[in-house]
Length: 205
View 1: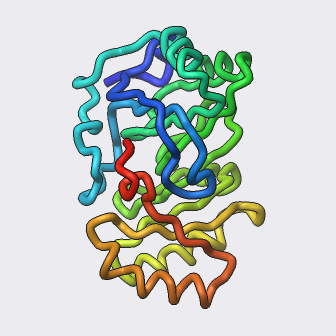
View 2: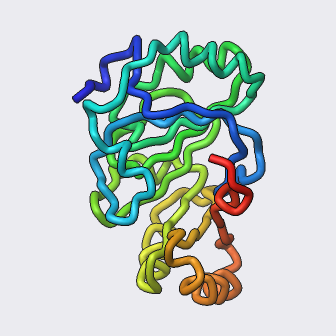
């Protein structure tokens, strides 16, 4: 298992330039860096191949930054797996020096490292988040598998900072069943917004 102190390289499952399909920045071009290794293990995860800590090659941070620059991207999303397992100070600093905005998608199970323009916090029932993430989150995105998840979303709503944007998003395989429940929820609680995985509808990564 890689340590958060291993700063010169990161275990990368995949990297690609696409359109952000979810949450606050949905529709924005983004370069995704998906790190390998996860300490949460959601049963419905659609990238379970990212879980194994040992399965993914380490890529030098400078090479990752150069790959972003080659694609002319001004926005990088670091996701996983669970990206907070690693020290992200170096990569976010080097991206910022090149004028690139950074976002992280995390379950909040470990303390944040790095400097971020946007923190998307997506808590999971499988492992409790650290307390600090509630103050750092710019976006709370709750994945909805059943109607009880909507009540669970409200439990987290009262814990995040007042400026945090609130999104509920159906788990892809349950979307047809849960859309009516989620739409009613959002209409009754207009501080929340609906997020959908639009990238899957337009067939991009």
